[in-house]
Image 1 (tube, rainbow, N blue to C red):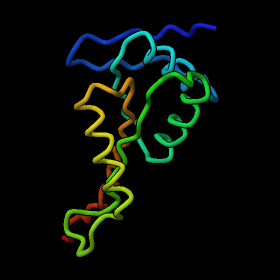
Image 2: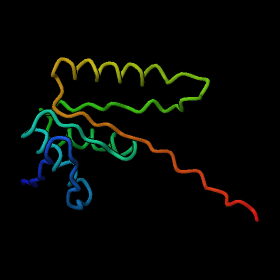
Image 3: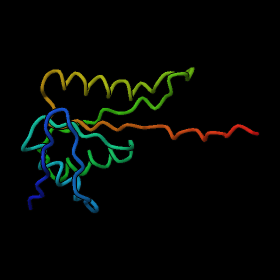
Image 4: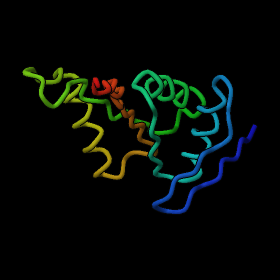
Length: 120
């Protein structure tokens, strides 16, 4: 079953069709097999992990990797977990070796702080 997604021109982004359930993972795995390498940006780390697992199920030959978020803020006094650091370094190394077909990059945008209106 082919779910053809359009490829955006280099440097541009494209809003794809709304897909239900695991159909996004199926479409992205087919796209990654046809157009390697592919970078996939997700809104949350949970979405990224789900896509990784489902894409590996749909296309076991696909070399898909997750570039996990640091899960720390710039001003935190503690370092990211060693497993996250190791996974990021492994994924970046494999990307440099051209050994990755698809890399999933979750981005976490902190919610905006509510603005208080000046009292008059």
